[in-house]
Structure formats: C-alpha cells, structure tokens
Length: 222
Image (tube, rainbow, N blue to C red; front, side, top):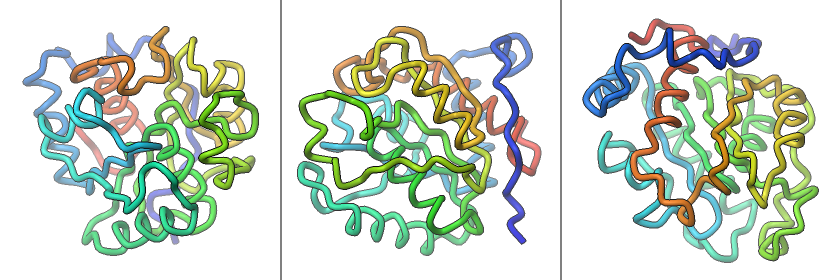
C-alpha cells in the first residue's frame, strides 16, 4: 500500500493568510528544516541544469538540499535521466519529496507515472516543459521526453506555473493539473521561473511549496 498517495484538492489562493506566520527567511529556513526531517528533499533540475542564479541553486545553498546530478545536461536522453532519478530515489532511506523544474518536472511526472509512488512522498513541479505543444526553439532537444502523462499521478503533487512562460501556457498548466490531479498554483508573470528570471530565494515559491506540503503530506509539518 502506498502510504503517500492522496487525491489533491484545489490550491487555496489565500495561503498567505493561513500558512507560515511570517515569510521571512528565518521562518522559511526553519520550515525547510522541519520538512527535511520527514522526507528527503531532492532538487530535480531541467535542461542545462540550474545555474548559480536559479532559485534551485539558491535553495540548495540556503536550505542544504540535495540536487540530482545528470551526466549530460545539454543533450539529455530519457533513459539516462530516468535511471539517475531511480538510483537517487532507491538510495534514500526516507521517502523522497521532489522539487523539480521544467524538464526535471516532466521527468518527475513521467517517473511517477511509470514507477508509482511507494518511495516518493510528493512532488512540487515548477513550470513543466510542455513538450507536446510548445514552439520553443529548444524543444527538439527534449522531444524524446514526450508525450506528457495524461492520467492522475500516484502521490500528492502541485504544478506551479507562470502567466507568461514560453514553455507552458497557463491554460495548459491548468489542464495538466486536472489530468494529474495536482494542485494548481500561480506564480505570477515570471517567465519560465528559471535562470533567465533571477528570483533569488524565491520566497513566494518556497512558501507555496511548504504550504502544499503541510496540507497534503500524510504527516504534520509545522
């Protein structure tokens, strides 16, 4: 039996009023630490990895998170990337919580669809690259990762999307959230939510992710 399965419900846009009492960096860092005592927090970057200005890199340094390291970031192959994620999940002594961006979010969703959620507690999927519909010039690099899943994922997940993302339209993000039975979270107009939009520690995303974990994971995260 998968102890971490559950049917997500709609995201409450008033999270700021009932989530963290203070969105200051100390409070966020403390919440990350407490969540990290329950699960293995694993960053899953997308195409080209996440450079030093990427929020994933800031989170890695500030909150002492683990990062998935792929052999080839520029010409990825689904089998290799899937094997790397499988090895990381299997090596963890605790349930894994995936914090994924772009192609990393696609990898995570497809991995969950293929492998189930017995060793994964949940996933925070930021700006999954819409391989099936995007006209982005780099899509040919990742075409082999398609098509995207169109059925419910086996663990609690959230999709966080931007209103002006060239890789993923907001209507398509809502459609994926419905198909995957994921929470749908809006990030605002922040492009692809990646290295080209230096967001620093991206407190908005961190607080939304922590609120999602508090509401949806099967243990209490204060």
